[in-house]
Length: 179
Ligand code: 5GP
Ligand code: MG
Image (cartoon, rainbow, N blue to C red; front, side):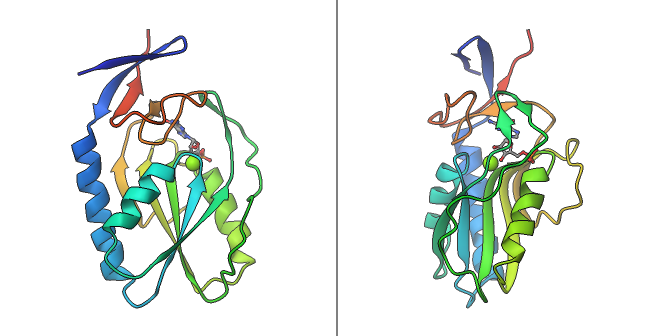
């Protein structure tokens, strides 16, 4: 087990790089099978999912495209009630098979807002693909079709996820240690 200090907090490893790689590959295989012939558009929700999306796309074996949007709901380590609007959607989604690529579905509010915003762009279908889901925190009714890991209600960093913008480059996932 290894420990990192970020600002005033201590984090310890909880999911290792090779486990993440393995699950990302499995998700990519599932997506490739389910969405064959659909030329899906991966919609990477920045910032947290940029590493996941890059790895996922390289494991997908069918033609697909990628686009990036931004939404934010977190301030430090506490969820803010208000989820901001979608920023930067510059791809025509009409008739497209859209796969939202997220880092974490926590309360689900961000995803709910995304689904609502995207519904006005007339996609053929929208699928949720997330690296992590925290089932204990989920308060909205969502069909999370593709999830790499279900995790407890702890704050995590690494593999794209931050604590106050730090820690995104960590290769493993680290969990906040309560002290
Ligand atoms: P939700 O709207 O589902 O409550 O929050 C989702 C967003 O909150 C995620 O996309 C992510 O950016 C952020 N988030 C939720 N839990 C964590 C966590 O444990 N660590 C980090 N770094 N971000 C989180
Ligand atoms: Mg996110």
